[in-house]
Length: 179
Image 1 (cartoon, rainbow, N blue to C red):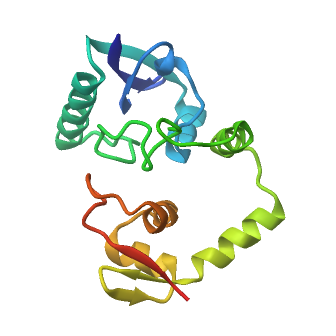
Image 2: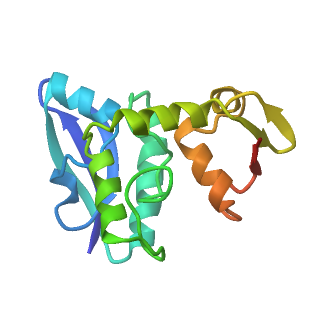
């Protein structure tokens, strides 16, 4: 069974996050974005299951509808996407259909849990962000510039260079690394 849920601030009873899950996902604090954690630190939270669904697709559709409706009503949600993307490249941990070693999966999970990265890792990441990138034929001097101009989250640029999706909201972007 799948469900949609809301996270609500403990002190003001304000909805600040809408999600889709199964099992005990609505209670888990791992694999949440920085804004979610900041809100919880400041206000605390309660979790409410909103609806149950037989299929994941139905739950994703309901999540998208709820996020859209609450944003239209002026709620300041900390969701970083419009919903329906689940554990895809825009939000979370998905290893379905991919071949990863147990070590690489664990390393990715640790990064998402907020465990500090090594200085070497941070240096490599910083250097990568300074590289030129071509987006739909336009060359940008850095990943940061490309992100600002196109609206692509800087964290998704590497994924889009490597994976070149053909469906979904990122399919309209063609990214290439420029040496």
